[in-house]
Amino acid sequence: MHYCPGCTHMTIHKILADTIDELGIKEEAIGVAPVGCAVLIYEYFDCDMVQAPHGRAPAVATGMKSANEDNMVFTYQGDGDLASIGTAEIIHSAVRGENLTTVFVNNAIYGMTGGQMAPTTLIEQITTTTTKGRNSKDHGYPYKISEQIANLDGASYVSRQSVHNKNAIENTKRAIKKAFVAQQNKEGFSLVEILSTCPTNWGLNPKQSIEWIEKNMLPIFQTGDLKTTD
Ligand SMILES: Cc1ncc(C[n+]2csc(CCOP(=O)(O)OP(=O)(O)O)c2C)c(N)n1
Ligand code: SF4
Image (cartoon, rainbow, N blue to C red; front, top):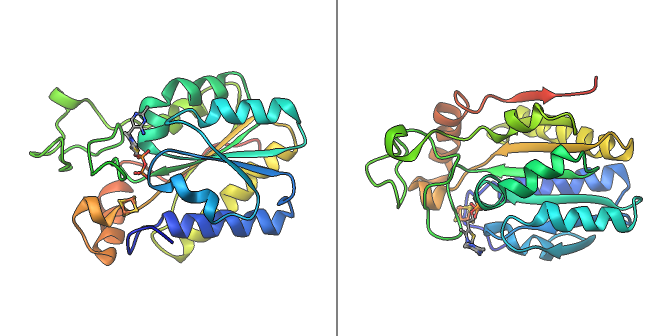
């Protein structure tokens, strides 16, 4: 794989691929790849995949689903892609209640382009564009877009999970499965946000990156289901 050592995009790929296999939906699955470090996700998945311009995956996915409602359509998007340039697309897909599933990988930074501040960057987090740390006066606050989406009537299932340990990985798998089942049941838009590492741009080694999620991300981006039909 092309990812940096310790990058949990790889873990998330494995969870997602295993879930597709377990649900037996490989033939009808169509994934939409993002722009960002996961741009090459189509190299690793044995199902139909297309690639959308930065932030536009939900718009492309909407077309795929409209063409054939039996398609199981998912997008895979980073926080720069989904919560910055693609905010309009993701919010309005949820507003319209598009019957799609989104896997949203939040590593609190723009990974691919060299570690610039993302909307999800934490207060005091150092990035290449917040060299003294993000401060709310100049840069605003971390964007909890999943909470916003959970409040929309068109969203059926919204969850935030993580991959920092075995339990978290199991919960992530359960959540992705639930999101696909919501799509199978035609319940509307489903999204699973997953807290993920970026050791390279965080300037940490893989072990420290896992600890950084636990210490810094989990208190701000609390995990659990934000909306469910249960
Ligand atoms: C229209 C457009 N604007 C900007 C870019 C540059 N760009 C490529 S990837 C990226 C950020 C990716 O960050 P994120 O979505 O968080 O994914 P990560 O790389 O962290 O997984 C940006 C700004 C682009 N490719 N296209
Ligand atoms: S730059 Fe960050 S997000 Fe991208 S592959 Fe490397 S560790 Fe992963």
